[in-house]
Length: 195
Image (cartoon, rainbow, N blue to C red; front, side):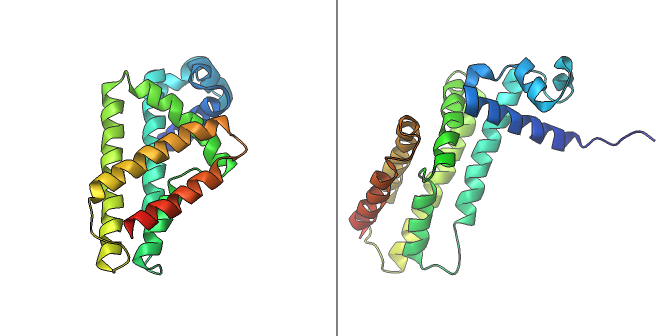
């Protein structure tokens, strides 16, 4: 009886391998040959799952953004009050440990690639819109609970997203987490301004 292969699972495994290679050696290190070798495939076997490097990169980018979206959704808890839930969302989107700082390297490589790939750029723009909407939603909930004052939440969300993206890049220069306290202090200042 022939062995049943879960092709979706294989694709997920290949994407994880690609993420790992990009994490260790940057985008240039993620060649079809290196991905195949690391995944334990023969050179041409990846073509059964992805037609080329571009499709692997696209799937990797989609996976990274999906992981971020899942975390944002998981940060919403009925057990927290509205202001603490807002804080949780803010804290969770800034790098707060060595692993998260290292994963910024994957994002940086993928951002660079998306600049010349219209469909990936659109994918990231949709992600940014969801992220902004969620931040605005959390701020409105905190306002409705009386924790913060009414103001231009879209502008505040855009500011925070810019800081979070900048923190991802800057922290790559401080892989031991030297700048993490600075960004934690920023969250306190950001919430104080909202109050």
